[in-house]
Structure formats: C-alpha cells, structure tokens
Amino acid sequence: MPWWAITYAVFYFVLSVIGDLFTFKEYRNKVYWCCEVAAHFGIGVLLVGYWVSAIPDSVGWLGVTFFLFAVLWEINLVRSAAEHDTVYLPLDFSDQCTSNCISRG
Image 1: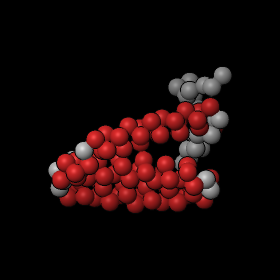
Image 2 (image 1 turned 120 degrees about the vertical axis):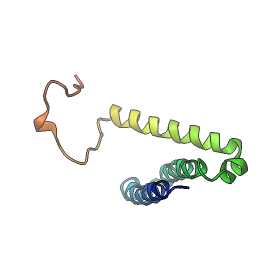
Image 3 (image 1 turned 60 degrees about the vertical axis):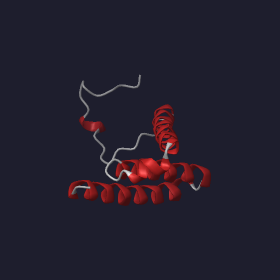
Image 4 (image 1 turned 135 degrees about the horizontal axis):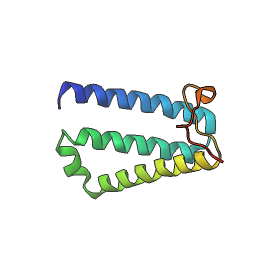
C-alpha cells in the first residue's frame, strides 16, 4: 500500500469517527448512528482492501453488500436532507449567490 493511500485511509477514518461523534450528539438515535458508522467503516475497509488483497478475499460478497448499503444510506441521507431543507454547509455563501446557484423554488 503506497504512503499516500495510507495517509488517505487514516485521514478518512479519523474524519469519519469525528463526524460520527457529531452525528451521535445531534441525533441520539442509536439505530441511525449504527447505520452511519457501518457505512463509513464498510467504505473504509473496502478502500484499504483495494491494496490489501486478503480483505476482499476474506469478505467476499459481504463487501459488495457493505458497499451497496453505504451508497444507498448516503443517497437516502442526501435525499432526506434535501426534502427537509437541512443541507449543512461549512460556510454560508447565501449572500454571495448569483445566477449559478441552485434555486429551490
């Protein structure tokens, strides 16, 4: 596994854990939080599994199931946030919006 992939994987796992902790503080729903953690963990394991061939060999079809679950979970979160108009951005650019911004109405 190249050094940059190790750095990326560590960065991914650290940010996922931090994000999951914030998610737990915000929602307090254990099922929701477990699904969020499982989605992040599954994607991270498959990311490392690209270089470590023993991981996909041992996981088998469970890896595909993890990947599909994670993708469907993230799609559901984005769709739900768009329906409830709760899309969170790190910075507020609403006052700088021009004609290239997406309008909801």
